[in-house]
Length: 575
Image 1 (tube, rainbow, N blue to C red):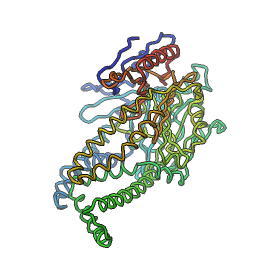
Image 2: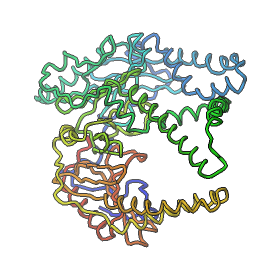
Image 3: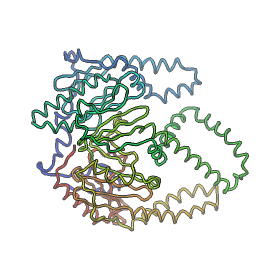
Image 4: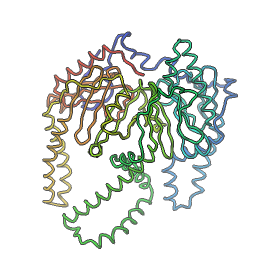
């Protein structure tokens, strides 16, 4: 293994040190990169004049699929359409129809007409594309998941959106936006038949019947049910988590999802004159209230009182939106385990049902903020192999992140054991980080406070010095943050804890580690410190990375050596 040290920055910029193992110990080579032609579907460009008879007579999607394509097109140009409506004074509907609606309808009809799929003996073949045509071949036995989502319009028409996922993970191999439920069952039957044939050839009938990931679909009424044709032994099916309405309300109070709604609304309204009208009406509404209150807003204390009132009102508003968001998104949340498969269903308006094999889980991460601890709750997410990659159908991947949007703290250990029963969760000895790191954090936060104070000094003069009262709080926060950073080993996993106000606990099985990275930036070198980052398949860079910070340099190097030694003697399991 070539160990590489990054001196440019303390940030993680990618995989630096790929763990190498012997062929007997590791399948990280071509199989882990999913280069095998039998795993990745073949994408065959359509040559001029070349036609496949089965495709020519292939099946089309539901006749109303053009309507959904139009809706997706309009959603893509939602902001430009709003600008055209409001900026133009609301009298330019001919312009909108000419440049948005008519082209969208025409393109949708063409796309519906050229899309074909054919259920062959061993594979599903999909032909699509208007300007660039291609044919995709996806073998039935390689399909890992069939995910369904249904919004109200889907349910009215008795259709669904279907995603086919193979073992390569990431973006779905095929997305059928509008397909009838009978066609879904036909595809599913083909997949089960192919898996049964492969099972029979391997003389292992019980294995595939327990590992199949295609069960559990929507019935005609839009509810989620396990297909009796597949799961005949309900004794193997176990409910891991079900969230009643009161738990979703608590989740809304705890989370800050309302900020997402506010940011989205302000982003749209900011493109038009609607936002200005909103603030004008808000000013007309609150001015009479302020006139009735005897507060001198020219005095700093009066300004402080006004700011305090505004913050309280904003928090209440955000929490209300968060409750609505959580209820609409996760209504009816249910997570079940059937053998080594997790299946989740949720959604009030858009109902989603998705599955993930347990062996594709790369890490488990728990988080708790202050409100979590007040309600004695926690939230748990997982990273799956390929499941967190950016995708146009990203909404379907959320179930693979937040397997428990909220859960009682007393049930966390048992829940994690059910998610990954092979992992040892008991840490015999925790290792702390360098405790002197609190001084680094204190200097950083004090510098930020100084930069904020300078412009305020021109307005509030000597009152700005009152911000110095925050320095003891900064010192306390820095010390507590560093004191809560630690890592430890179990027999087959690395566990890392961090955070004080918002606590994180990340569990990484040694068999899932792809690479490790030694980072030492400018300030790290000055303080004789370094960071160690661990990478697994499926981690997206925008999330909580497994990065052990503020280690003494010799401790960081020892951790790198220990990781390499332990991981090199395990068999890498990507899926």
